[in-house]
Length: 439
Image (cartoon, rainbow, N blue to C red; front, side, top):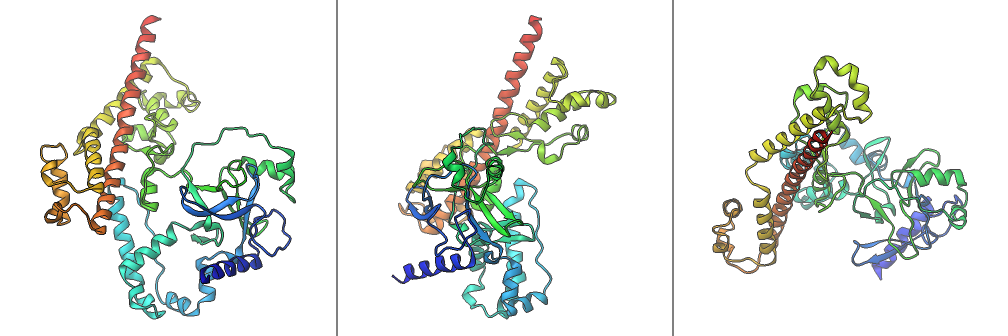
């Protein structure tokens, strides 16, 4: 009962401060109930926000005013002790993780450095010793970083009451469906006219901070039936970014990318950024990569004359396309050969890790396998060799195994993209060669 009372008190506070699931700006005794309801979804993340009625794609579903958002600015205004402590310390720096190979090491190094920088401040503001530990810091930083939303005036983002009740759907490719908009769905927007609704219908994000209404606004990215869970999207994160920021991977992520070494001459041939030159989740080269390779396989003195054709997505010639695809396939093969394990090794290792997570077989079961050495190294590194005969694993060991599984799964997916790219290049080369001969 106490928890229920706190929950009701929280909803009343949200309503009083202006949080609303209605397009109307008029006040109400409840912040939810007209468009959204709090509900439990056992197979979709647990507690979340469901549709209280049919919701049209692009419709405003929640509005959270600026004064309700928790940012560093609002926190410092309310907490004089924290403001004073931070004023005597330099601001914590944030570093960009560039290299996938070192992503985990850099992330660990950064979070530990941040914790060390904050220890004195936590002491000054009177936090209890158990709340100043590195373990507590890890929990707090992860809790905040996975829930913050972007706002234009604060690089750290904001925490959004009621808004953080939304659960998230897996990333999807750009929406191309043309859902019909009924008169009922348009009229349900209240103060929003049809022009505003069309703008919302076309929006590419779940929402954002809008200066016009001085609030963070959330929109439906699809049509929802009454009772369905209303979900936000993780956006266009790659699997490496999902792993780094949220701790999970997607078996099929349309936003995943594989970066490979690119010759400086190829890079200098176009004005595309390095971030746009990659292999897509299905093994196909990105538009920028295809363009760079087409130009890179021509004499430099011809770049200016043919650049407009390349940027229009045109093939320059059969020979040029074949040369570009051969270069790409060769580079992918070189990258795969340099890696300590193959795709098949990783697939086998993932199967064994899955078996270890369900039950711990005797170590002799791993002998003779292609992944035996890595399994042995793993157990020695975590001093688990003496305990592997036990059929039950302690929680710490299970967490270690899960992190290992995620690391192996990510590298497997990276190699799979390169392997698929080789197949794509070989098939394209074969098709072009046959076509060229038949002419």
